[in-house]
Length: 442
Image 1 (spheres, rainbow, N blue to C red):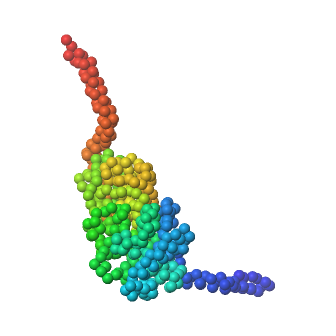
Image 2: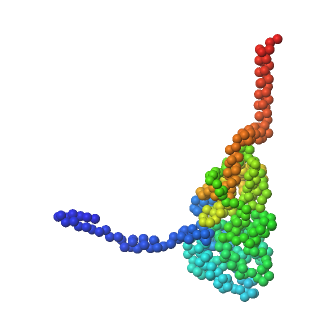
Image 3: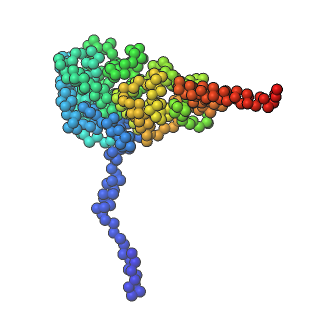
């Protein structure tokens, strides 16, 4: 600032507030807490679900009865199962102590994994070493002991309410899938290996127990589960997700043709494209050949809707994650515009609806793709999208199929078309009888 007084120039220098300067310097040096710098690494795999997705359906991302990991730890509404975790931990310790393995050994086994486990979370975890390791041991031991008992490796306590009360078990199936409700899989694997009893070395793997637990609702054949007995995931959600991804799936096309999304069921049918139920190990195996799209049956219910939504959130957040579930969800979003599209897929045995009305299923699927980034050029269904669009744009069979769809799709439309044809034929005959005498008089 400059002032003039009696031809003299006085220069005043504005002083920076030192406290303000110190606070700004401190904020510059602080690491972000809600989204760590390391959240962009492939090692980070457990995220807070983006707010835009939570606003669409928050119930699909929040645990109902059990908290796993730090994000929902200590919430009062989840205290009931928190008390049972300690019972399961005590039951496990009672078995391993016979072989000289106590609680202190669990903590020591996980201590070298502490920093690696912390880096799996997208937020800074405000727990000291002792509290963090206690959480890993308590939650991890509960999961592996519960899975072992579900897999009949050890018996449940008599009248254990976690299994005798069916409503508790059904919520377990969903809560243990939630993206915000996970422990790193390597923590579970370390505790699983540590607590193996003599004679269990040849027993089922941890992956087999996990898939067997979720198969209580998925009901997949045993031979499919056996293929994934050595599968490794980032966590339980990722493990189950990976078990659906076919090994032969290719990602993207290698030409320069841009990929466009396809039309809904009603428009595809007008173009002569048929949809039918196919046979495959996974619902992700969708095929298109000679105007026929084959889609393996999929059961739409509360569990699968929760699984889809959390997989989409995980694929959206993780750096190196393939986008198979997001791609499949986008396919369904393309195919379904109205409840009539859902009804047709149910009639073709592609959907088995235990979710609600056809309109509710349509609304769920359309919401599944909202606010989700998706690259059709770099997905495992890009060739299918291109093939369907090429067939859809073809000439003669599209016109023929459109006429068939319009006039012969239902008995009533066929009767109407047939009646119109007879009326037209009678009109032509009448016209001929009228004009014939003028050209051929007697």
